[in-house]
Length: 221
Image 1 (cartoon, rainbow, N blue to C red):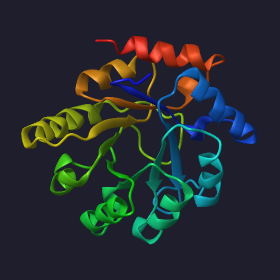
Image 2: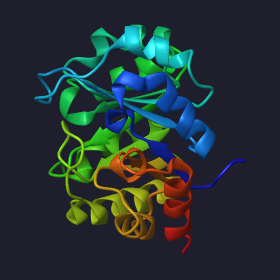
Image 3: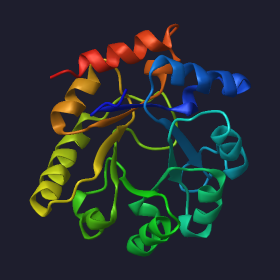
Image 4: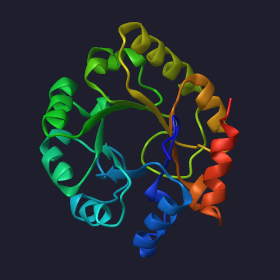
């Protein structure tokens, strides 16, 4: 079943000792995408996974892999993540010396391209590349760790970016990542988000299907 609003459980919050089972469980529970956080220990202080693990993930699910690159010089490894099976690659404006070139590199490789910006980064930083992107990711926590509190101050920026895209007839998806739960998802939806990364709000619950249904019900506005 296709949804206008998408729930993308964040595998950062899954049990990595049971990753295959966790991925299949949230797919069965009604997830739309799977969000994969890639951290390099440089752009953000944490360190997670790379292309070899994503390649294994690709074989474990039929869901789109929404791969979020929180890494320095992403252009150096785009080809590896595409080959591993990413369906969408999102890079951070703060990590790109030439964001337009990186986004074109992603699109030329045949996958969808996203641009992310941190809570403190002004919307103006991504205006010149909005025509290239399939997704805008507004971080509602500072990147690097799961389980953080939602930063509501990022939402006006999301609304402003969405309004500008509408004015220019650009039609990316608008994703929020960080601190999403049954309450904050409502605020994010009102601000214009249509794609929601949820970590502990799904994987921290006993019943994944009930958790996803609850998130969908909360944002029916």
